[in-house]
Length: 154
Image: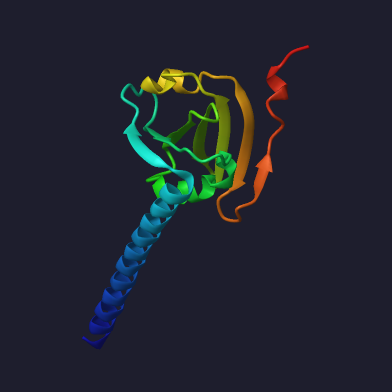
């Protein structure tokens, strides 16, 4: 009987710790969301209406910062799972940024923005890619890729 009681006490403590951890993560997300809203002029617009592939979330921002400077915080604040793709538009900079996650890495690709591309997922990343960054989610290390020189032919 003592073993069962001990087991139940440990189980209750474990569940309590897990739920407290989840609540702390929710608070951290809310803080990051507010911070990104204030510092980057970021707002989430929701899912793209015509989605032919995966869940694609659309947002925009107004600061003059490049997306690699806040992509990791954006990921921590707004991604619900790693199968999403996020499109972040900055009309004043003329860019659309795709943020996707795979195996603990964030892939941040910057495209030229074309007005109204955001109406369909199939068109949103249609612009010419201008730069790409790979960010390690655990360390925050950022590696800038070679500005898509591979797709240009001589």
